[in-house]
View (cartoon, each protein chain N blue to C red):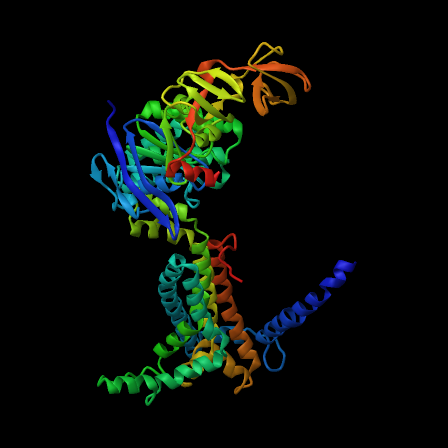
Length: 270
Length: 357
């Protein structure tokens, strides 16, 4: 009885924070403004504007995740090989921006990439042609990579740190080259970390609307932006909820696929 | 004359300020089972890692079949290692683990299949190809690690305390297995351990190390029966180490009693260390032996009784299959061949022992 009482706050929290909102989304998603059952909000995803947004979201999220992985794995390798002091310093450098507000960090990129911004001024002083990547998908990918990279580095680093040095030495001992050790030992053994890193980058990248708002200049619509607009400017909660449900399906599918790789939950950090 | 295979010349290795090996030289012959024996921190594992190529000496050279391999990386050496913690690849099954080295050297799949089978047979694990590593016991993992190294037909097999994690029975089985493998395969074994029993059982040559120096090198019999200094005597088996005075050749005075012995060349009236193994002390009736005393302690430890006998002002450790209850008046005697005379430590190497032990 006492134990049940102790769990009450958490049950309350789950109920208020998860169950009720989800139920409401499901309710709105399957009804029209008058409260009648309909699947129009769901099949609205096949309207070209929505389908395009979802496609673009998936594409950009995939690219960001891939870029993050390509940056994070070598970095995690460097961290593994570093001495304790240097390790702490590099991790600190990477964590540092995370202490700043997410919005501020993204807005900083806006200022940097602007037409008359720092980046282009620098290019000009070097007599290079200016680069207008603000308000393009490239800027959004840049923002996503910048914001989510630590979430890829830490789980991979964790997974790599768990690999016993003896195992790596054993591979060299049996004649393996560096490339072979990477392919046959380090990569396979860090799969749980990679899976967890991919989840932690892919899902927020897929759902973000803030980064695309700020760095896309309101001209590039990701699925997150569409949903946000349905809830705010259009005040069409039903359509917004319907599209949210579709996005949730994609997230659940990707999580389920990755969970198979990370069976033991080893790569999860924190 | 056996052919020399590996030669370490004047190796010095320090980690930060801690000098682990100091001007260390060693010769390993072909098809020899050589054991580096010593307490932890004596430099034995570092020596092995230098031979394996995992550490580079600060100074000195490593020769393999006469060629300098000091700077050759481990993957280019014809040497394989069995690691202390086995270091099997957890994401591969037993067969894949054993095949790893063969696949790298580009052998045909038929050859690899045969070799894996042969390797498993060699370590008595037939039919284990598809087992997962985590499903194996420590002893089985150990044997897989051995098979994984052996199938590459290395000239030298390095073993870093491979039996350390096993229980006594399994360890004894593995000891015989290793001797069998060495005889069957004709490869050179360099074995590192802190367990003197393992060293004495398996080796052709034992190298007793302490403080980065070789204390004594020889066959197990030589090491046990004729320890060169107090450290070796103390580290290998139980022993009584007593101060004595070498009166003249073949005569030594211990506990104010004159004993005949077989050692010569220590000079006249020189202080020496005397080693007497506990099983070499002969217990008799009072007055029969050279020293009279009394049993003050008696423990049964399986093969024999271990007694402490107070005689001549010294507490002797004595082992005997006959039990003498505490309080019994007895006498002690030693035959001359069993008295081992050693110089008192005076050189740098021997001083190091005194500070370390």
